[in-house]
Length: 128
Image (cartoon, rainbow, N blue to C red; front, side, top):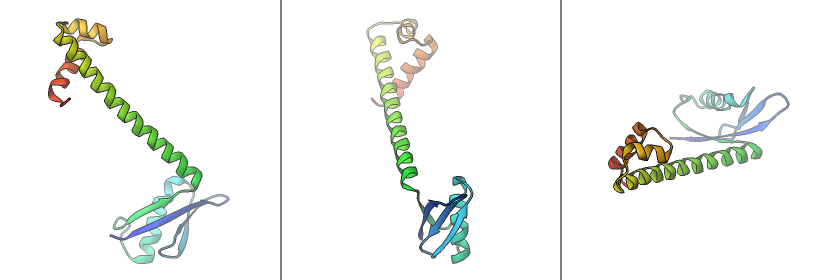
């Protein structure tokens, strides 16, 4: 599968999208249009279908930096959420092992007894 690059820069009223592999430039009125405009340009210039090749979009540095920070933060949140879920399962299981009732577990963990039961069950079906 061929790979093309779309280099995005800002012009006065539009986003310029340069595709060096076909030595052409197109424009997009907004960032949502960048990929489709680049794919259409490549398709016209090569005769390929717009979804038959890979496209790497090179955003301006300030956009790329912001997107990278946003994505990294999202990954950190996902990892933290998994640690929280594991700690929740461990706590519920430990409380049950110590003889606490499901109602007590729910009260101590700040959830309903039904949710406490779900947490305990999820700990039984997931590897630790």
